[in-house]
Length: 418
Image (cartoon, rainbow, N blue to C red; front, top):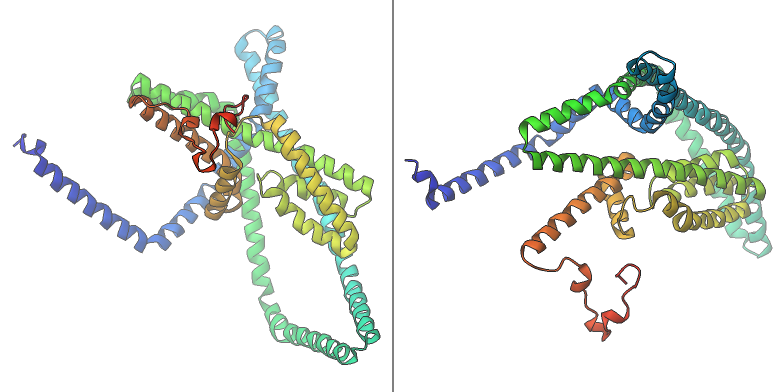
């Protein structure tokens, strides 16, 4: 009987059974996909405080580690034991990390909220005047050019449009005011829940910052208990590489975006462009998203400035273009260095796929995730090539025969590429 399980016939039947089971499972997965999505959303809502806490702890880790590292030697000289010194250093690091987070939130709110209110008030005051001015100028131009009929049609169209908007407000908007309280109450409950999640997240952040060494030790224990030494080392190396890639990318982009926001504010102040604080904050925040971030921030900002002054909107777009060239060719490479190691094409691919699957969060983490996948895929390909006795240099697989060009003539001396 034991020999039967080693026969080719058994392997064929087992392969057929496995394929059939996989097809059935895939069918039930597709059939219940909406239910699975709903379950995942409910689960994500439950664990949201933990996700917030872990994200905050990860971002605050450099501050926490810096304070512990710098304060421990001093405290060790003024306490009885190293354990007491470490405890006090951790308390100081926790306080410093929370102060940094609160300071960022307060500063961001102080910059954004007054500017948003001011911008909305200005738009409410300016837009009707701009529309009337544009309508008057267009009517006068048509009358001067001898197109009185078109001018009359334009005025009739505007009057009908105004009447349509008023009728829509009376029939659609006003009857719905009765549901306003339910909408407001839902939003209030959602806001309260978000605040509670944030407070719980802060507590989880504190616990994680002070216990991350214990968590890491427990994970290493579990890995060592179930894996060989070589496999465990591979897992540790993967964790270190992923942490290096994510940390370098995220922290580097935050610093880079902060510098870009400051430069944008200085340039807008010198050029006397409106909404300097608000627009600079938008440009700095959206710049965290690689590749598409500058466009995401520049387009609404340009529209906002265009309402006030169309010529200044053109100056702003030129300034943003120059600023992004400076960031892409000078500031970004110096700060980020080779943290990602992806070409522009794969960066764009990772952002589009990540954004399509997970929205803004996917656009933020898509690049480092794809960088990790690309790194280990390249390692796998190189290992397979080594096993087959093939060269691992990609340059040897490139040819320019269709151009009648010798590739050695155009090879870069610095990088070995083109």
